[in-house]
Length: 160
Image: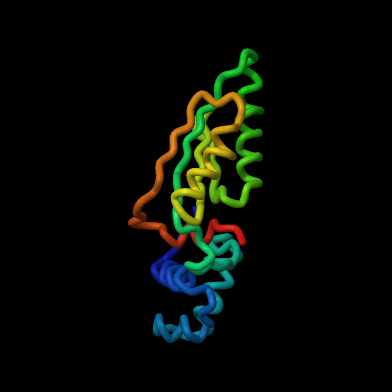
């Protein structure tokens, strides 16, 4: 685990909010010398506390509607094939642009965050691309009405 002090955390908070900030701007906001900020950012990069810089897509490029979809795979006759099939589902979903995030839970469950322009297109996408996957025991769709924390995550996960 990487050890961070208050200054490191303050720098990370500012960069997380706006990665375009210059060292001078960060130094001014934190009332510290530029040399200190430069050194700390360099150390944060070396330690792996900062992996890379990225952008969040703006509101116009983000999906307007999202849903969490939980898929449970049917256990095949040869149980050893279950892991391969679940991995196949994950790879398949990962290649589709409307699928923002894919994860595995347990041996037979895949969870995906799906985005769409409106409720109709979101439902149509799920019906045509997810419910049609073979050998699924169940598919649960939870449409997301409101996000209290992490709304920017959608802008990070969205494909262009």
